[in-house]
Image (cartoon, rainbow, N blue to C red; front, side, top):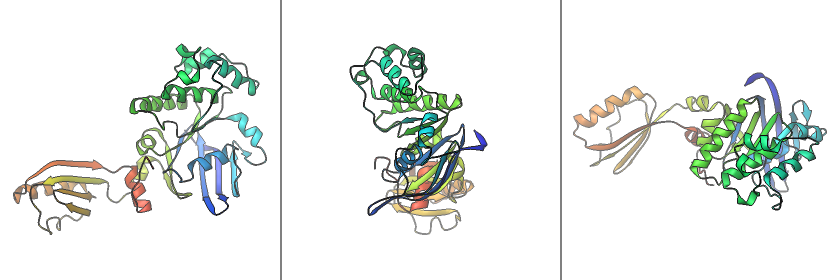
Amino acid sequence: MVKNEKVITVKDLKKEYKDVQALRGVSFEVYRNEIFGILGPNGAGKTTTLEIIEGLKQQTSGSCHVLGLDNLSQSALIKKKIGVQLQSSEYLNYLSLEELLVLFASLYKEKIDPLALLKHVGLEDRAKSVVKSLSGGQKQRFTIATALVHKPEILFLDEPTTGLDPQARREMWDFIKELNKQNITIVMTTHYMEEAEYLCNRVAIMDSGKILKMDSPEDLIASLDRLYKLSFFVEKQMPKDFFAEFKSVENLKEEYPKVTLDLGDVEELPGIVQKLKRTNTEYKFLNLKTAKLEDVYLHLTGHSYSEES
């Protein structure tokens, strides 16, 4: 990631549809060679933001520049420099993958080696196949291949793993990381927390058309006051003042037989365990987890996050 070189600058972007305000003043910057993620549930404004940057929609107000080009007056030039993978794509079913890539390249007046490009995305053995014969993960990789025919500087991925099974999803993660290593800046939307944590250099958390916070996944998580979640089961109800001496305990929930709490200082954990033993409180399935992006989202919005929403 080249921290000082901005390839996308978005300022106070707003988009209105009659009575619906899809974007409410979105601002961010993307640096060369980073993987920048826009994270949020369906309806947060992620796809609308991408479509404006890509030149597929026009904003109601605000500004957007891609590689120094204005998205409104220089949209045609921008499209020559970016690659776009949409949430869903349709292809001519009577053309093979090889033929389709040649067709896509001709739209950019490019001559390509389709077999080399298919090898690049791990589909060289399917060159003569049609798209409808591909698995979900293979189709996603082919869609990205069509976006790479003109060697774009920036690749936009809109929900690239939606609908994939866990194995195909992780294969796609590895593929995206490999693309990024080839000096391609990647901007992606996702509603999978784990995906954003694993792939992205920086993440913008969106909700209801606004960016709530933006930073690296590590720093977003580190910004929380309570970095650990502790849970366990007990055989009998615990005294109400059991945790009073532990200063970093918050959000205590005792829903018998399960106890859950947030722990700000992990060094208090041994004291909690010792007190459980000292008071002959039988417990099992003691589980300590570090905070995740989902906890950041809950802290920012006050409501829980559903990845399938």
